[in-house]
Image 1 (cartoon, rainbow, N blue to C red):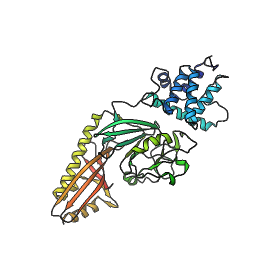
Image 2 (tube, rainbow, N blue to C red):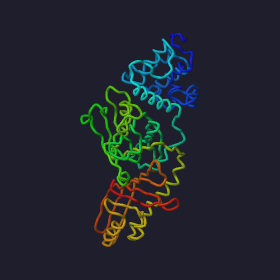
Image 3 (spheres, rainbow, N blue to C red):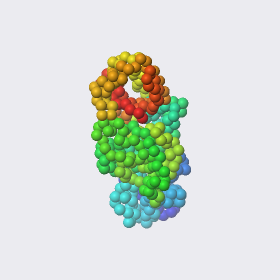
Length: 410
């Protein structure tokens, strides 16, 4: 017995069933080690405080754990997972407990959801962000893109990276909830979160939202060009908050949106730029050393420059070789589009093309697909314009060059 009278004799009680009911044996061993409770997290945030209390439970410091949980609840009275842990701590004063969430009056599905949330939050504590690595998707951010958001649906986590002089630097990460039926969204109503490279398209004001969205919402451009090409349907995929009576939702709880706590979305929202910020959603982030992205970035940059020069040269056949056999533009396939380009090019006596502010993003789950954005300045003897352009580049085979398979105004 501890001084508070909380039964702590068995391993199940000592770990409050966290180690035995929500963690694997390997995670249990790591959790009981001397790893700092706030590794990579704000030491004063509610998640860090909750994880610290779980660490204290693992160390049989029940009084301290209860004090910490009460502090979390004082600041965040709608944090249901913290209520569950407090209930178990109080129940353990009277008898041993064999599973997390034995408090009477709580439905089994809710207990399962809260266990899943605990698992996701503790896993973040045990697997801190690798300091010498970055998500391989961020090949190049253009200067206006101050931040990028990378969501890992398998870990219920969103990572924020800052663009510092063209190099990306990790700044924060947040617990998220995603689709009830997982990721890889295919059709409207499947309650899945899409996987891909997306961009913030709007900042929906509070007065246009119900309480369900927590007062902030940022739609993304799902379905993007790649989704549409593959017949994926649906709409209304947002980053948004939680209802006022809910601190956080279970890891799998949305109809496809990415959901953050209102506190976390308040911190994140100043970093989200409409029409600019990339939101990359993956079901497993591949972390690489920064230098590992250089080769692909440089190769794509060379292909992009060759495309620009071939267009500027007026050699229409050289220009068309930059486009893959599966290229589409709107409703036009490659052959129809190429014929139109030949007709347009015949009226040109000279062409100048400038490109700048280039962003490059490797598509999650693929090694052969990249999204490239840039500012384009076009001038010829009979036309001039400026636009933000988006292209999808793909390798046609393992050893072949990269080709454009889609392009449009961004």
